[in-house]
Image 1: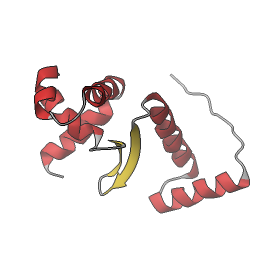
Image 2: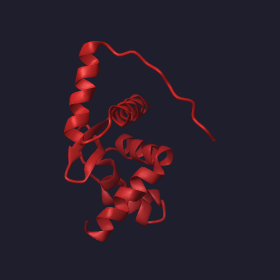
Image 3: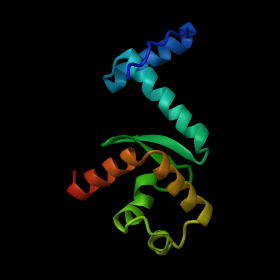
Length: 122
């Protein structure tokens, strides 16, 4: 399926900020706009999630806690068992755990890739 190109106008200030981010992250302008757009959509879908940078790139994190993939690792490895997740994180509230599961249901490839990298020790 071919995706039609999208044209957009950004203010000079916004365009310059995107160019600066693109340069810092060694990405093209278009790829940077794509990444920023995807992150904005995810943060709108999941207001408790932010995106943080680290040695392995940008990743979804909870505003008041760990990375989303970290919370989900026992859930995924445990065969998507809610009780395994609940027992793994008794200190994390149920609404946060449920948000993590919803995030996984929406973006399983993203979370599975993070878990795989972690299991490989990279």
